[in-house]
Amino acid sequence: MKDGIHPNYREICFQDMSNGFKFVTRSCSNTKEMITMEDGRELPLFKLDTTSESHPFYTGTQKSVDNMGGRVERFRNRYAKGGAAK
Image 1 (tube, helix red, strand yellow):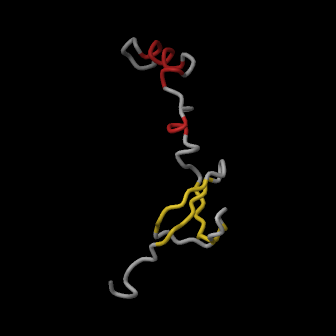
Image 2 (cartoon, rainbow, N blue to C red; image 1 turned 180 degrees about the vertical axis):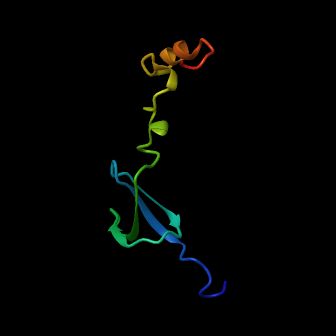
């Protein structure tokens, strides 16, 4: 490979700021902070707002539109008559 033309591809620690979950993978992301891992390695730190550990879809806490306390039924009843509100 030629020197100076490739991005800096290295191991980076990604941390979910909502629950502290961390995972290490390789990335080209630019970071300003460093973190010391439990095994003693010092890695660049990239902070995330949401990961699969905190996102409602992946954790199973996402609410279905049909289970919103009758709001869908009220909407259907109101606009089922076929005409717009006068």
